[in-house]
Amino acid sequence: RALAEMGEPLALPTSAFEYDLPADRIARYPAEKRDGSRLLVLDRANASLRHLRFSDLAELVRPGDALILNETRVRAARLVGRKPTGAPGEVLLLRPARGEPGESAELWEALVRPGSKLKPGRTLEIADDLTVEIMEGAGDGGRLVRLRSPLGTDEALRRHGRVPLPPYLEREAEPADRERYQTVYARALGSVAAPTAGLHFTRTLLDRLRERGVRIGRLTLHVGVGTFRPVDTDDPALHALHAEWYDIPPATAALAEDVRARGGSVWAVGTTGVRALEAAADDSGRLTRLSGWTDLFIRPGYAFRAVDRLLTNFHLPRSTLLMLVAAFGGHEPVMNAYREAIARDYRFYSYGDAMAVL
Image (cartoon, rainbow, N blue to C red; front, side, top):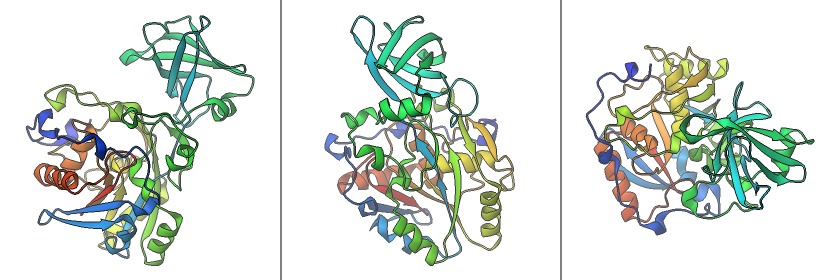
């Protein structure tokens, strides 16, 4: 379905989404204040750029527009322990092997390290009251694992799980990350990574937007690890994007339809929001497929049907996320915006600054 909805994709190779980023531009820690991050504004009408603060968002979102937030919550899904031999190992829980990602479970799809040692039949002791049993191999080098704990899965992960920070931060999760690597409106547990565009919002900023007449909608898309894997093929069309679970409340679908009927714009907060809204949209832009798994791969040439404005962070080279932003804002305008952000010392990636595409 994803390819069928692409229309006539532009023949852009993966190398068209490369850029050079100095290592010191990677934000390894969040800004002191969530809404103190910088905000680069790209206007698609004339490819112009403006430099604001995220707290200035009320200047961009008009009264009557809809701001759609992704309420997913990051699970403390990284488990670090030791094999019976004493050798270290770790497991990253991706999603329950059965059911939806937000459900509690004993049986999980997971990534393990070292993969050559943690083979089926092996165990990893995380704590006295939590053991991981490697059951069998799964796709893409993963494993099926079973959690064994008298505490129950949720409590065991709360006590012993670690926040799965992106590897490019090159540091271990710290106590502050448990709060700062979640949005202030996170509710539905099930992601392995944060929907990072939402990390800039504060409750005060959301209240100010509401007071100005901005309408707030909510959805859930549970972020999977596959979204952040680089595209290894020279032709992006050959890259398989992992499916992610989304759920859109009927009230949010009705809100989006009403806002557009009144001439307002639907803002997606993050690429995850874009994927959920576009996966749910029919050819007329109405949201009719309100829940399910989506492997929709949005890249230049895609015809957007449900999203009018985009809030996002700055993404890795060769990533499907950068391709989505380039599809929305135009390849050359977006890549030029990235060059401008680098020249002006913007902070990049999950804990970095933000970008609005109008």
